[in-house]
Structure formats: C-alpha cells, structure tokens
Amino acid sequence: MFDLKRNSEIFRIIREGKAKRILIQVPEGLKSSVGNLIDFLEKKGLEVMLSVEPCFGSCDLRNEETKKLGCDLLLHIGHKDLGLKTKVPAVYYEYFIDFDFVPLIKLILKKLKFRKICLVTTIQFVKNLDPAKKFLEKNGFKVYLGKDILGCGISNAKKFENLIEAYIFIGSG
View (tube, one colour):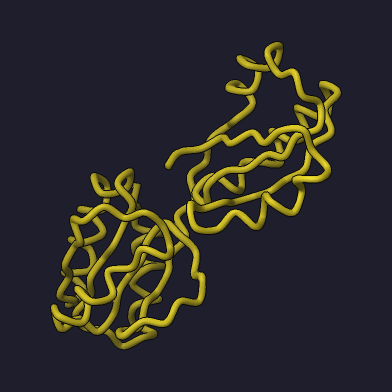
C-alpha cells in the first residue's frame, strides 16, 4: 500500500527532478493501490497520469508515451534501474513488500529432492530471502542467494548454476 511515508518519499524524489507533469508506470500487482499516491501527488500540485499498459519490468519503459504526453518525468515503480537510456528522465522507485517465506517453504520442505539450491525472487521480496535461507540451512540445505531476477535479467542467479542442483523462485510476476 502507498502510505504517507512512501508517498512523501516518492514526492521528494520527484521534486528533486523539478518535474510538474509525470507518467506513473507500475506492475499489474500494484495498480489497484496506486490511487492514493496519485491523489497525494495531485494535491502537491503535480499533473499525474497513470499508464494502464501492462508492465513487465525495468526494461519495459513507457518511454515514447511519456514524451508524447509532454511529461517531464517517468516514475517507474516496483523495479530497479537497469541504466537504460530514456528520452524523458526516468526515476525508479523500488517497492518492497514484507512477506514471510518460511511458512511456504515448510509446505514443500519434504518434497524438495535437491539439497544445493539457489533462492531467487523479484525485487519486491528480496529483503525477505535471508530468513528463508536460514530456515533451509537449519534443515540441511546448502543455500545460495541469487537475490532478485527479472525476465530480462537473471545474472544474479545464473552465477550459481555450477554450484547448485536447483533454483527455487519465491515471489510473484
């Protein structure tokens, strides 16, 4: 959810870029909760538009649309900056979600046949991997953290491919 703290942080980032008209791009899972952020930003004097096109990661920027709409800034929420060149400045806001993976892992623990694994997730859940790793290690697994992966970026996980028997993806998207 976009609460006052998050909204204020996003507004501060936008103001640093001196933008007045922005296009917001968010992944499908966050679209339903972005309304209060838009209201907040509009009350601060910004003209805000929301892209309703599906968003498939950091490399799927609405770059052309942002320019054609006359926006000063593309606010891309939920992914990290991959350093792509844009026609209009793009600001990335990594959206993190607190979620305990351990109960999910407990459900599949007995079915896991591989003992050397790499845990991966999306950027939204990356801060939740350490407790999952500790739980698996207590249960006899050798665990590597591939951290976050994207459809267009799996290098964080690929570097462990010669050390493991399987990848476990826990997340969404």
